[in-house]
Image 1: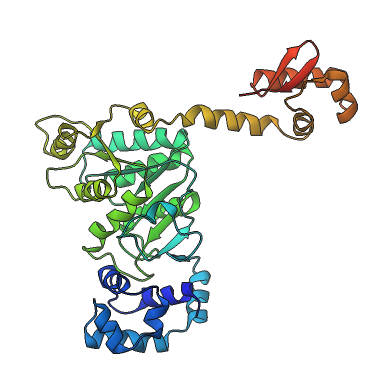
Image 2: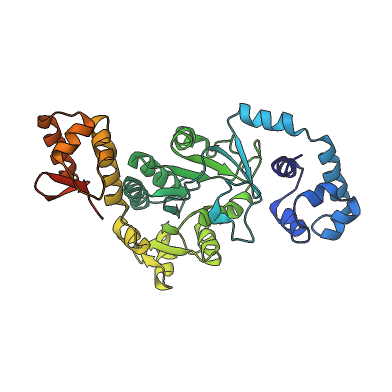
Length: 363
């Protein structure tokens, strides 16, 4: 078995929870040593009792990697391990990173900014409206929204993100083949089509209560910033904040009324130094990010650089060329090329340093 298959085997072994794997791997060089090890060696590595080590070795003997990965593929489920090239780079620095992930759709784009949005499940109308509005506006400006698809703030932030058109990702506390809560089945499908559903729990895993606090470290780890919208004083959403702070991440919060219990957690975060969110520009400014104008420019560029535009644009460089030279190399007639050059100038893609000479705009 290769390392991906080995991790697939470990992922499906009974009761091989993250904490057990972490204890074992702290004393082993890599996953290969588990497969080369004996019952005694696995117990000595820590994390497993004697019978647990024996059960793991029996599971390794029974595991059929070809059959298992074919089953995953048949169900449109992908698998990535910490030893794979496409494992999320943002998670790599953390000691508590998951050793493997299952996902439907795709993983977050490492080159795009990502913001995690979390908050109360039993949120107010204010919380729902703010979550959807901020999620949509972040998405419209090219920011990936990451959440957990839970009821309340998670749901509305991801509904907004889908409306905004950018990818959104849900890190869930069950297998990726299980939609929880069930009423989010439509959202579940939309997230897969627009981004991805991610979990460290193998397909078929039920949404156990202890899964959710653990999955929060993945939500915060994948994000460049955490935004909290409505959280009680002891809200589960604050677990994500704790993970973010441990990971060195930045936290922001939407303020609420001082007498509203749903806002006590957010207001305390702000009092303790978290950034305050009154609109989406607060988040983008804190990120030093001006994606809106960059995205707008890229879309304009893609729209006009088609067919003849692409040919004309490709003939231009930093060294100015005359309009007559461009007519000769492109074969575009004078009347048309004049209009095209004007449009390229208006879009800010080229400039005319002197009459009838054109070059790519040097930004």
